[in-house]
Every structure is written in C-alpha cells, then in structure tokens.
Length: 498
Image 1 (cartoon, rainbow, N blue to C red):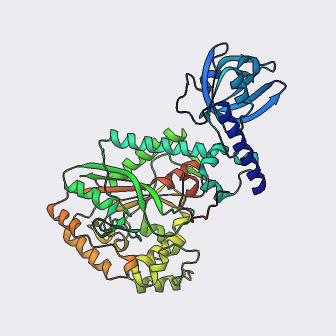
Image 2 (cartoon, one colour; image 1 turned 30 degrees about the horizontal axis):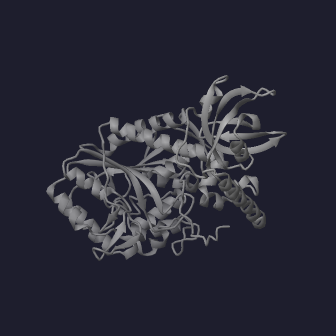
Image 3 (tube, rainbow, N blue to C red; image 1 turned 180 degrees about the horizontal axis):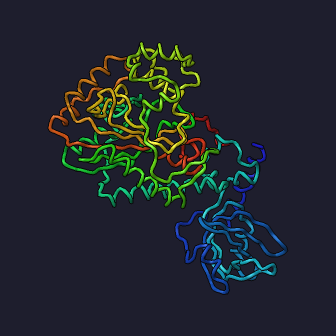
C-alpha cells in the first residue's frame, strides 16, 4: 500500500511539473467566487462562478466530468475543449481528485437530467499531492482518523456534524449566559500556583522570569478573585490541563465553562441549570429526549434532587452519617462484602491511587464511583456532597459534614459541579492546611494570595462548572471524548511522511 501511495504522489508531482511548464500558477491567492455550490444548484440557466474541491474526476470522450464539493454542497462540472482556452483544457487534463478549482460557466442540465456547470473558464486554486485516503486505502484506523483529522472530516460526514453541533452548543451557552447578565472574562492559563481542583498539573518554565509555572487545572480561584473585585456575574469558556490518565471520558486538555454568581446559592443554581441545559439541548438537538449509548435520556424538567447520602445508602446499604471516618467506612465496606480494591487502580477510578493514604474523602469517593454513580442515569441532581472532598465549598449550616453543593449526573457521568462558595478565609486556610498534610499528589496548593483576597471580603456566591467535551459527547451520542475533540491528545508518533 505504501508503494502504491508513493507511486500516486510521484505521478502528481510529475503533473505539477507539467502545470508549471504550461505557465499555470499552482497556488494562487485570488479567487473569483460569486455563488456557493448550493446557490449554483438553484441557478439553472444562469452564469455562476464557484469554487471547491474535486471529489471525483473522469473522462468521457472529449469531455471531462468533475464532482466538485464545497462546505455545504456538491455539483457536477463539465470541462470540454471547445468551451475552454487551449491552456485551460490542458490544465483540465492534469487535474486530480483533491485539487481545488475555480470554475466560471453556465448552469445546464445534462442528457441524464443532472444539474451541471458547463465551464467557460477554469483556474487551479491548489494542487493536491496526496490522494484522499478513501481513493487508495480507505480510512478505517481509528487512531489515524484522530491523527489526520483533516482527512477524517473530509471522508466522514458524521465527524463534521459533531463538530458543527459542538459549535452550536457553545454558541447557545454563551448567548444564554450573556442574556442572563454574565460578563465573559479571561483568566491566566500560566499560573504560579495551581488550584480549584484536586489534580496533577503540567509544569513549565519561563526563561525570562526564571520561574516555574503551571498550566491551570481550573479557572475557579481567579474567577472568584473577580467577585471579590466587585463583579457580580462572570464566566469563562476555556481550556484546562491535567497531567493525568487518558480514557474515554478524560483528555489531558479539555474545555470547561465556569461561572460565578454573587448573592446566589446552589438551590437557585439548580433552577438556573435546568433552564440553561434545556435551552442548549433544544437549540442544538431540537428535542429533549435523546439516546446516549443505548440509554434513553429525558431532559424534560424538573429533574430529581437526591442527596449524596441517600444515593449511596440505596446502592450500598452504607449510611455515611454513621460510617463517618475512614476506619468506620472501611469496616462497613468489608461488612457489606463490597469488593473495592484500595491497593491498585486496575479498572477503577484514578483517585483510587490515592485512597490508601488520602483518608475518608477519597475512600468514600472510590466507593461512590464504583457502586453508585454508574447507576444514576438521570438527569439527576446529586446534592449535599460530603465536606471531606469539596474543599472550596461552603458547609451546610445544619450539617457541617456536608457541603451546600450539587452535581448534575447524566448516564452515570458528572456533567455539572456547583456549590455555595466558601468565603470564610479562616475556614478556607484551615482546609488547605489539612489537605497539605496528605501526600503531595492529593493536596491543593495553599494559595496565600487567594486567602488575602477573601480577607478583603467576598459576598455570598454560588459557582458552577461544566466540562463541555463531556456534554457534547452526551448530546451527540459519542462514547469517547476523542470523537468530540477535533484534535485529541495522542502519544507522539514518529512520522516519516508516509
């Protein structure tokens, strides 16, 4: 196959040389485009000027037929000697599939009734030196599709449709937040301290400052600094980076939207979330009942609200109000004969790597993710998560072991995470100090400047975050994030230009 490809490329390079001898400009900058192909299809009997890529080309007697494609349509082009200049017809004889051309001519119907542009003028816009994969080998290898997304988009219409749906989702999200009075902002990606989540960061070095920096794992702490600074509604859509594993629901580089709303609480955010999510789904999908990986999902509000304690109790029989320490929880797990491996991560969530030493919070999280979360089809609001693993959320006044928080779960996936923001600088400092006592891979960095900001005073605030990649995967029925990220992270490949 490689030999055949090499032969095809050599043949096209020979054509490139022949075109230069003709005096044809191979990659011109100027284009004459007066209609899209869709418009040309509706212009029978009129003159048009279109551009596009040749999808297929064939000769029939003294005529050359080319199927030409632009972003939204396809049309046949007829190239005949007596309608073109000698130079242009010589150019037509050197065209290949994949080439970009500019055609001017009249829209006619062939004897078979096919709408066709009969060319009176032909310009080469770009010569393709490599054939489209389907023309010589197909394009079935999944990893190669991710690596060569440009070819994947050309050959697989469903991939392009997912990308278009993603664009509609983000546009609808932005419009909803803007109309609700939020201001879009940008916060640093390069940060001297990482924070806002428990995750391993990527580290880099700034030469001029001779200082190490981290790629952000979350934009939370900077957005809340803006609340301290007097803004009441802020949001950011941007990339975060976590130096952790890759699987169907995680990519090291991912897109998040986070917003923070002063004088609001998590209960109000649940109502807001129902309106936001249903608006986006109706805009992007046209309906609220969807199928995801064989599961029926109905996003018609209102959505159930279940406490974390009740959900875990229903699935495991363990009451975390009673099993409220690491030792008690491990005893309860053993008594219930729940097989939970706390010594390795094989087939289990990444946080299990920390569970042996990290205490009650991570053991509980591992139990929940192994037994309960997969059963929560939803959409469902899981509320009042334990304080043990939400270090930035405000405690519930009537139960300090729980936080005023919720997660939106759909098909066993965490889609939204939200809570009343902890604005007590003393409590925040204490929680970070307790976190620092645990092993390095598990704690959040102590951010003294953020504590200083809280000491200036932050009003009651509710915050909200959603992974856009995961949300898009749900709405487009994609099993892996790689299918909704145009260029997912892959192991580098030694590319010899084959």
